[in-house]
Each structure stands twice: as structure tokens, then as C-alpha cells.
Length: 482
Ligand SMILES: [Zn+2]
Ligand SMILES: [Zn+2]
Image 1: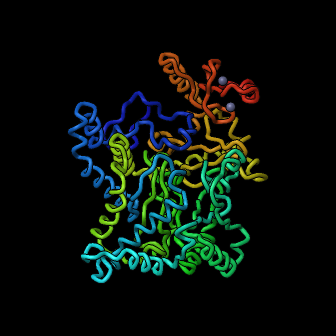
Image 2: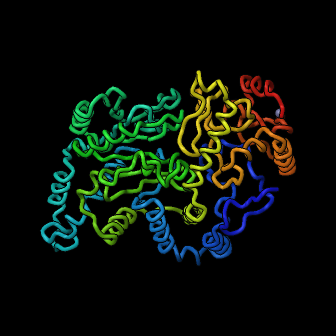
Image 3: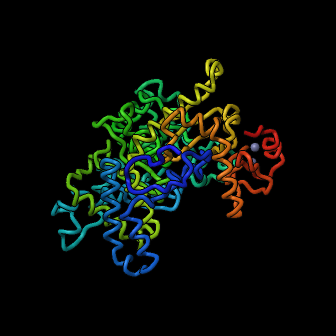
């Protein structure tokens, strides 16, 4: 066996396979197949929690604060403020509008002004504060009573709620509810003037935030950096907040956040908000107080920021449950110690080299691979020959490969060859198959369509299963064994 430990951080168990062919990774919710066990700090808290939950609950505020600070240092000045179970729970216009109102109402311009501050005045004047905030944000009644979002066409539509109206998948579209988001189309990027007009009109009709992806979560296509620049400039001019959805791209795309990659980053004009989720262990929104709109709220000191975060979180009894908090902190610690953002870039180039070698001439007539870093979208037909588990969206002709970021072999194109299709592929899968038989489990994902695999007649040679539909059975039966 080759060296297994990705880097020196703590101990990695030597019975882990050097590479597995589960590139589905629970729809991208799994960054690593060793969870956070390599982080001693959180592993010990976890163990203590199973023995003495009350003692660990007593450290709740300390741990939540530790998480907040770690997050901010890892993601370079994005402060996590609100937590939710799923990212769709937070990309709701009323929630985002309330969050912006909270941030504005507790900003230094208000709380440090003796004429306005509810903290400094004996007779608080909420109407006066509210009026000040509306002027600061350029909001009218419509932004308060019927806030709306705008999405850039091609964004991964949310599974439910208002953003589902904009989904590529009809199953989501038919359950979309609430006011449709304003849609910013490709055509709107024809010129800065066109885009600005569109945004000004949206703002006037209640748009509070523009949401975009930088890598399309469904087909891996890239938001052109020049369009992203134009969007930032125009949002700043139209005074609309900008949110980048990083649920799929954080950590996985060669930088802590994909919007921090050199081609997207500009220190003078940054997004205001990011949404995060999936592999992070918890979903939510983080605020960049230097963002193109946020900076007008004049937060300059850490204490001011922590105060507004406290105000927001104090509305709920527990912003995040203890076990989730421990896991989320552990994931962050391992991501930093093992430098997953840098690894994800190496993994991306190793996979791309492997893929283009196998694509040969085919890649001259058709696009075979897309995405950034370790978010790898592969042509669906082409992907079949590798007999790997991938995450599909049903209507999409792309297979998403989301390899584990701790995998030792994933950074080396030769090792990929060897373990995926070469001499060691078969024995590696035998180990997985044997283990599954012992545990009474099966391969997790349908090899053909990517949803949960359900059947008993999975392939013991390739460690592949299918979901049980006729269509997928045909696809499964047609696979050629390793
Ligand atoms: Zn299937
Ligand atoms: Zn097989």
C-alpha cells in the first residue's frame, strides 16, 4: 500500500481504501470519509458529550463563539450569523430581508448615535430608527411588506419556496410558491447599462438581494468572471445586496469560497453575503461587512460585528443544536489543518488530466468536463465507462463527480488510473463489497440515475447498484464488469 495519510495531521486509519468510486458523496454533503475524527479538539468534545451532555451543554456559548471565530478566520471575513437545516430554508426573501434589517438596525451608525440608539436612550424611538434604516438601504414599503429576490439565470433553483420557480427541474417548479424572483438573463449582461437598468427596476419593485452561483450546481458551467464583475458594479450602483450561493462550492473549488478565487475576487467590490450548507455540516448565511452594500453600515470593529450577531441569534433559544455544532466545528478544523481548499485544486487537476487522457479525440468534438477544482462535471455518457457513482440531476446530461477531499490517491492522475480502471480497481471494490455483505448494506447510489440504490442484486465485482426502476435496471444490466 502506498502512503495513505494525506498530510501529517493526526492519525489516519490505514484500512481506509486509498480511493473509493463513490463520487456522489451524498449530493456533495460529504467532504471527507473520515469526518472530523482527525481533529482532536472536537473528537474529545464529542466523546465527552456522549458521556456527560450537561457538562458540554454548559460550554454552549463558548463553542458557538469558537465556531464563529474559526469560520471567520477560515473564510476570511465572512461572519456566520444565521443557521438553518437546509440551504433552501434560508434563501427565502422575507428571511433575508429581516436579516438585512437586523444588521442595519443594529449598525454602529445607529447604536453609537445618542440621538438614535435604543441602547443609549431612555425613550427608544423605533419609528425613527426604522426610518433611518429605510433611507440607509433605499427601501420603501414594498421592500418591507413584499420583499423579493433576483436570481441570475442558470442558478440552481431551490427545492421549494420562491426560488423553486426558477429551477431547471420541473418537479421543483411545480411546487414553487411565493413571489417569483426577478430573473437576470444572459441578455441582461449585454452591457453594464442594460444590467443596471434591470437592477434599478427590480429594486424599485421590492428586490432586496441578488443571488447567484459561480459554478452551476447542475451542469458545472462557469459564471464568466467579467459578468460577475459587471454584476457587482451594478449591484453597488443600484444599491442591492449581493449573495453568492456557496453551498456546493465552498472548500471544494480551489479556495475557501469560490468567490475568493483570483479570477472572481476584487477587494474593492465584494459580495455582501454567502449561503453555505451541505458538507459544512450546517447551513446558513455569513455576512461580509466589507461587502458592496454592507460597508455602508459602517461596521469597523469586531465587537460591533459580534454584537449584531448576538442580537440576531438571541431571537432563538439555540441557534444550532450541540451535536451539529460539534460536527460543524470539527469539519472546519480538519478543512483548515489538511488545507482542503488547496487539495481540492490539486484533485481537480488530477481528475481533469485523467479524464482528458481517456477522452482522447472525443474532447475535440464535444465538451467532456466542466466545473472548478474538485467540483467536476463530466459528460453523462462518457462517465458511464468508469463505473463510478455520481450525483445526477435528472434532466441534466452531466454527471457530477465530487471526490472526497481527504482521499490520498485523488491528487495523483497515475493513482487515479490505477485505482479506478487499472490493476488495483478490482481488488479495491472487492474490499468494499465484502465489507457491505458483512454489514448487510449495499452500494448507496443508483449507478444509472444517482438516487438511493434499493436492490439486492447489486454487482459484487464492481460494487455498483441501482434504484429499482426498469430504466435503471436496463442501464445496470448493460454495464460491463471490471
Ligand atoms: Zn436509478
Ligand atoms: Zn460489474
